[in-house]
Length: 141
Image (cartoon, rainbow, N blue to C red; front, side, top):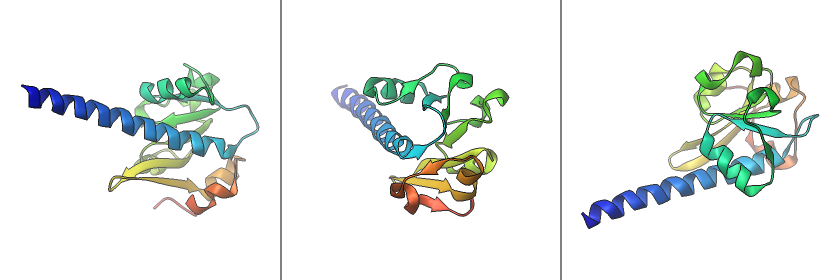
């Protein structure tokens, strides 16, 4: 019983730390991106929004229509009325499925990977700092 309890507790702590790491990376990426409006974040992942609210670095919204920046985990959660907003996805596959998305953060072999699609940021008038230039790709593979 004690081993089961420790296993469950360990799993919860690992999950919480991975969300925290993911949010830290997302906040760094968002802070290196410039759009014409004040950044207001919406995500379909409630844990990410909760972590962003705690940090107080960015404004969040509960409605994607009010957002200027969307962090998307699942394609099914993207409303048609919100598809013209800056979309950053949490799965590389979604870059192909959602042509309006300009970048992705995903985990591969236990490490975070960032991809920003250069033609898409140009088409959406998104400016990035030199810190994100190493993550630029010419196309989605």
